[in-house]
Image (cartoon, rainbow, N blue to C red):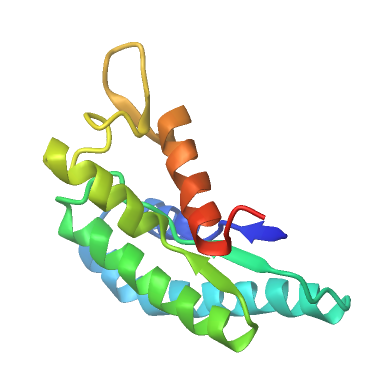
Length: 148
């Protein structure tokens, strides 16, 4: 089995290039999504062209803050592209976005409070999944493909 987890850094690069100006990022989003679609297509097509016919699982990115409509909108747009490319190449999609959201709800949609993000020494969290978050992602993949 091959798993793929790409795309969220493309959104981060767009925001950084726009100096976190949301109007700029909104204008740049279509080009970012088009480049993501092209890159993902190249990767998956390349894997299939090798003759590999086994399972490929693409993992959607999770949100750090489900209360941030800009973050959620960007990730949902990215996920839309991912689902579209996946269907064209017989790729299954493990929905980490939904899994993290479900786990975050009891904590006010806060992945840090839910323990799903790496806790920093100052008690805030960074954007990366903690061991609990990684386990949730892995379980999402296992639930999708079965435990074989």
